[in-house]
Length: 82
Ligand SMILES: [Zn+2]
Image (cartoon, rainbow, N blue to C red; front, side, top):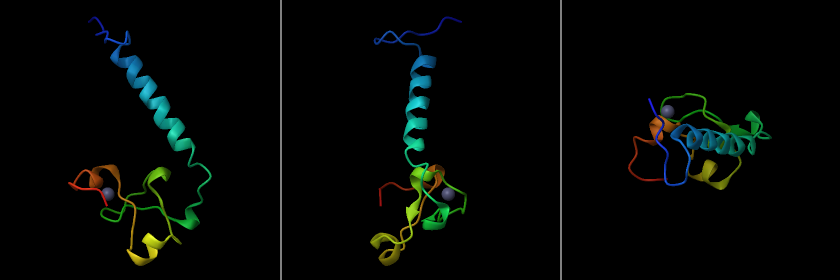
């Protein structure tokens, strides 16, 4: 099967690879986060979430508003952003 080439001259696979690399860079920027300082589990289903979704325990929102992480699937259940 022939690959579809988009207007930008890239195949879907190439675009996906670039997106995945961007995602990896984004996630790597949170590598220094320590689990002890963060809420690391989805507040709805309890799954361990990616570091980029962690919520720092000593922030105002975490203390006053009980802000907690949400995993992707649970986040998609909501129509609005907290
Ligand atoms: Zn969840």
